[in-house]
Length: 124
Image 1 (cartoon, rainbow, N blue to C red):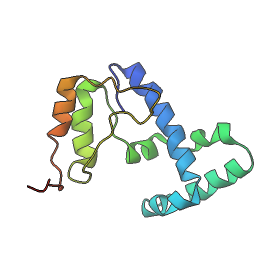
Image 2 (image 1 turned 60 degrees about the vertical axis):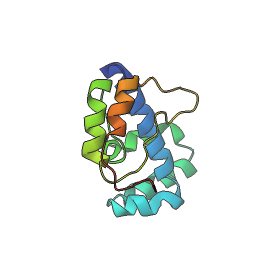
Image 3 (image 1 turned 90 degrees about the vertical axis):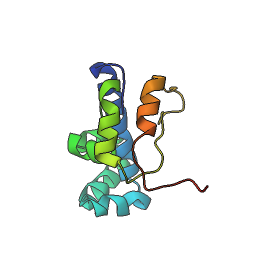
């Protein structure tokens, strides 16, 4: 998650925190949570959603858990954050996780992100 300034990053951080809680409450995603020792959190989130506590689930997801699933930083920091967290592990990065909010990434930043090494190689 990124933005031009710290306030924009924080707004997206809160949005992603809710997304992590939402997906984590869904049993289909529990194997991912289990892989990171978060199985109890997934089950707690699921119980909360069944009780109708949708407005409280994000509060159960710590900053560390958000950082586990997302790279975080302003535009001037995000390429390094992506490489540190996901470099060599992923072969694609979405520029916008929310289809109702278009990406505001500057073109030079997109080029910096594209330079991050990956294991994937296009067939020649």
